[in-house]
Every structure is written in structure tokens, then in C-alpha cells.
Length: 390
Image (tube, one colour):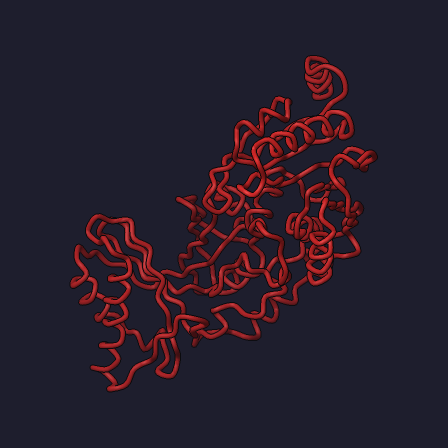
């Protein structure tokens, strides 16, 4: 019988539902949605799969020690009770990441120091030697999570955040996170059943994530390393089997189209798409949105237009007005999904959204809005849609 245990997958705000679906599809059990996290149970193979396959996970944690404490001194004492030699080798390095939601512990940095001191003192007292702390690229990543008086110490099996796929070495000024891009696409329900277009594609992140979703290519396939590869119980043969299993990959009959007003952005997107190995499925063009006249029929549009501080409000509102005009006149039959954070920008689109999904882009509270673009009046569209269902 394989050894199963609890794990926690961390994600971005409001992507918990799609991450839960991803984990269930991989065979996870006891899946429970939390705050920017999904807990689940599984074995070592599932932990490897979750790191390799989950598009909306930031990291996969394996809790190893839970206890109650109301002060940093109490944390120190509890940490010293754990058998750390089973987790960290004497010649290995480690780092500690601390997250605190508690009035008892005001300073997460001080708590981090106390945890580090306890581990170091444990080794010094027991073995008269100790592993070293290393902030960048350590062998073992420890995660400390404190909620009120409950403390959980986890091993971080991912290491560097899973949004760092490895294909994006160049980027435009305000690139969207790979995890957010994948989450947006999965939220639309698109899995490759029709063409997809991003008319303001920037460095091409939405395009690459869409191609990998359509072909079911694991997002972690280009990663150089996962943290679990340095664990004492790392099973190289099992990981090779998980890594080389291409049984989930599928055909994609359509194309993904990307364009941008900036030739520099298109050059960067082209390099990233090539590095991701999906050039065959992506068509790129350097052109402004307003020059798109003949998109492929019955597609889906997913885009993250500019909404930052680098554009004047007047130009920004003009841009969104143009987006609305293009959608109405050129993208009939489409579902269009647009991410922005300014209500006045959305108003300028001049179309009624059929869905609004709150998302965070960095620290910006955004909305991801769906527009169904149809010919004629909305009443007729709804009537036809209803009759089509009967």
C-alpha cells in the first residue's frame, strides 16, 4: 500500500476552484478549498504530478509538523522537539518562509529568526554541527504558517514559485503572471475546442499558456528543478516515469492568434513561444487591435489590455472605446473575456457583460469580464440561445 499524506497547493485569489479541478483530475483525494489554497491527500507520485501538471498552483506544500503556540519562545521550544535530522541533512542548506495571521505574532521576520535558531540549536546540541541557512537556492525550503495559535511547518516541494515555468526569459514592461494567465483561460471553460485570439498579447504569456492547455502539455515541463529533487526520500525512477508520461497530451486542430501594436513585444512573444515549443500552433502579427478585420470564425478572445499608470486616462478610455467598437463590428459569434481594473474603462466598452470574475493581478483588484458578441439585438440572441437548448 502506498503511503498517502496531506498536502496544500497554494494559488492566487479566486483560482481555488480551477486548482481543485486540476488536482481532482490528477487523482487527488479529500480535496478542500481554502483561502488561496487547496488541501488534498495523495502519495509521492501525486506530489510529483501536482508540481509538474498544475497550471494554477504556485507551490505544493507537505505539512510535517503542527502544534499550538502563543509566543515566539513557545514556538522555539516546540521546534526543538522535532527530529530535524529526518528532514535536513547535515551538509544541506535550508531557508524559511513565514506567513502569519495572528495577533500573538506581530513580526513574521522575528518568528523566522526564532525558528531558524531552534533548528540550528537542535543540531548543535545533538550533533555538535549544523546545516547552514541559505536564502537563495537552498537544498530544503521550509514553510511556516501561523493562524492564531496554530503553527504548521511544511516542506515546500516546489522551491521556486511554480509560475516560473522556464519558457519566459524575456518580457514586456508589465507582464501577466503565468499562473494568472492559465487561470483566466481555464475560467473561460476553453480547452482547445475553437481558435483563441489575444489582440494585445504583449510578451505572449496568454498565448503560450493557451497552447499548453490545448495540447495538455505539463506547465512544469521546462523547469530546471523542483525542490523535492533534493529531499532524502526523492525517488528518481518514479519522477522519471511521471515526467515522461505523455499519455495525457492531445491533438489541437485550431490555431492561437496573437497580435500587438509593438513590434518589440511581438519579437519577445516569438522568442517565448519558440522556447515553449509551441510555435507550430501560434500565429503572430505586429498590428494594432483596430486593424484586425477578419479574425477566424467562432473563436474566443482572451486579453489583458493596458490599464496601468503609464497611459493617460484620456488615451486609456479611448482605447477601451475602440475595443468595444471592434468587438461589436468584427468579432460577431465570439466570447470575449477582458481583464481590467477600472470601472470607467469597462464602461467605455459599451457592452453588457454576461459574467464578472474578480481576480488579482499583482496587487490590483481586477475583474475578468465575459462579453457574448452576437449579431442583431440582445433579445433575439437570448431567444435563439434558449430555443437552441430545447
